Length: 414
Image 1 (cartoon, rainbow, N blue to C red):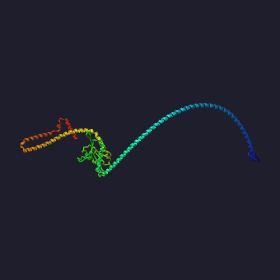
Image 2: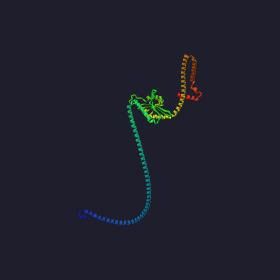
Image 3: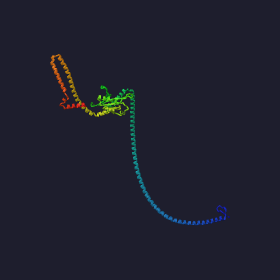
Image 4: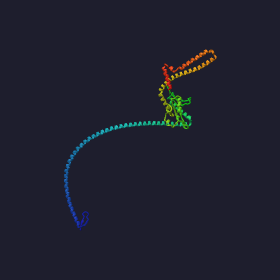
């Protein structure tokens, strides 16, 4: 066993031969390694010297290259600076142009905005004006509709109240009063010379309710016979409009009216009669059925239609007056013949009586008797001449009078 002391910590420890031999080998190896390391260090220093020499050479070459590079860089920098200055000038010019263009666009945009704002303002004002006008008209229409509705409701209530308080006869009279009031208040100013009165002439056994006539140049151009019919809801027997057509047509013909109009509240649920003016001329000529609200309309319609045919009526009236003149001449002639014959018969009877009395009482008046007989003969001859007096003989050699008489006969037959 051998003892060894550690040079670092100073501890002594024992080792055997094998461990000692191993340690000696290790020491020898360390020396060898140290030699190797020394040699390596030398080589390394030599290599560094060479490297430094090479580096110095390279550094010098590099410095030359750097100098050339710096010259090139300086030239490039000068070129770049020159190009940059030119580019900057160009950029400044472009920016100025862009700025000018932008300012021009801004001015145009501002002008367009101003115009758009003005147009929007005008449109807003126009819209407000139209809205105000619309609201005003709407308010007016609503107010007018409300007023009409209120008046209609009041009228309905008034009529309902009337119907509860009036008898059947009074209901009919209230309809007549309504039509008369409408004519006087709304049509009288338009037709100042018109005749509109109740028909009070019942000499023919019947009469209508109202007669309307109007004139132009003292010539009647339109005439209407009106019949007003109403019926209370409580009336047991419900009439129809057609129940009165025959009587209305007879009254129209009796009073010489051209048109016949039935103003009716009968059959209140009829769609036909509630639709407006109903023409029943297929039943009776020139006859119409209306509700009271069409009273003014039917008069206006018939008046306007009749005025359009006024010229034809005027020409017809002239022709008729000529025919009437000729007819009256013939009638006067016939009346003269009848009167003459009647006077002759009376005179003949008187003379015969006188002759009988004279024959019975006075013989010496025979001469007077002969004279009276002679007078009778003369009267007979005169009567024969009058009987033989005809239109043909009167118009012989007078073609104008013959044509007038022939025309009068044709008109009378027509």
